[in-house]
Amino acid sequence: MSLLTVLLCIVLLVLLISYFKINPFISFMIVSIIGGLLLGIEVPKISGSVQKGLGDMLGSLAIVVICGAMLGKLVAESGAAQQITGGLMKLFGESKLQWALMITGFVIGIPLFYNVGFVLVFPLICSVAYRFKLNAVYVGVPMLAALSVTHGFLPPHPSPTALVAQFHANMGMTLLYGTIIGFPTVLIAGLLFSKTLKNLKVNVLKTFQTEGLPEDQLPGMANSFLSALLPVILLATTTIVNPMIDSDGILKKTVIFLSDPSVVMLISLSVATYTIGIKKGLSMNKIMGFYSDSVKDVGMILLIMGGAGSLKQILIDSGVSNEIASFFGGMNAHPLILGWTIACLIRLAVGSATVAGLTAAGIVAPLLIANPEVDANLMVLSVGAGSLLFSHVNDSGFWMFKEYFNLSLWDTIRSWSFMETIVSICGLIGVLIINALLS
Image 1: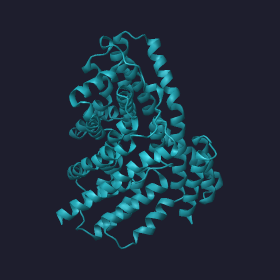
Image 2 (image 1 turned 60 degrees about the vertical axis):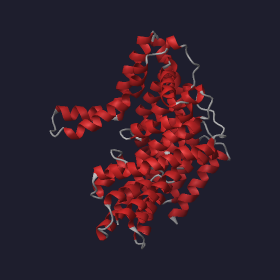
Image 3 (image 1 turned 90 degrees about the vertical axis):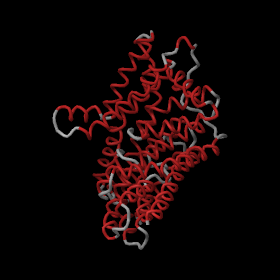
């Protein structure tokens, strides 16, 4: 009965947004309250779940998204994105531009949380699409597929890192297997699948579209790359350095503090304000004007993400994810396939890939003990792949993709949701192939 209720809530959400044209944030609030009532949450506790879900989501994303939008706007308006685009084109050529973006997405996606990576690379995607008159979704899908793969498959991302610990896997081997599986997955879900999206109608946010500046007004190549990619450099450096510090002294605490995405974004924005702003002759008033404009464009995106967080919290507090996991926990199937399936179903119900992965782990872990022949590293990747299946209206990533690219609901499903599904299925196939080779 609970699973049917979840399905009805998702259908109602789609109808409110697509048919009745109600604002997505308001739709989320309505569905969250109705869902809480139907799923048996005590009436006084429903508002608490809604507020907690919204607060948790915005608490972890607001600074990152806002600072990322500001940095992206400055990178675009200062000409840094134009300079970076030109450098990539000279290196790879226009015919191989998607390859350049895909490889970049895979490399920077390893240390970056998905949402951080998205707001950082989106201005670059828009700059390339605008300059060369290409479809922005066609250009961006290979890069975003790479970010998605690293988010679901590879430590140090939250879900795979926690799964490594729960399954007592080896982080180094998980990274190795994940990379082996991840790259061909990105080729299929990114490069190949993007060819079906060339005719998609796209009208991206104007905040990242700028007219080209004369060459003599552009920041230097090194300055442009450093300013735009400083968050990546800081996070990658702290990720590498942190395990090397054994003590719990001030150095360790400083590295942990500097590895926080919000702190990284604030530092990066401050540095870029000078390096590609003030240093290049832009007044502080003009720079702050850019920042104000960027916030206007992401304000509704943040509210929609918060709404998705409210619905997710209602589903978690109702116990639906545990009900799904318990139902499939007693089935007789190969543990790798079972782990993937459970993660898929929880992902469909609650939206969050991290929640799906961690919830599935609680059911799958005992299966590994009962089946010691199953490779724990492959189980991490199997559950991680399952946690990415068919992102839809209860996932903040879905709304981020939809609103940034300014797509219709159906076009978002056709592009983003299908891409995530391909990533998930290819991930499982890769796991099973490696398992067969190791057996």
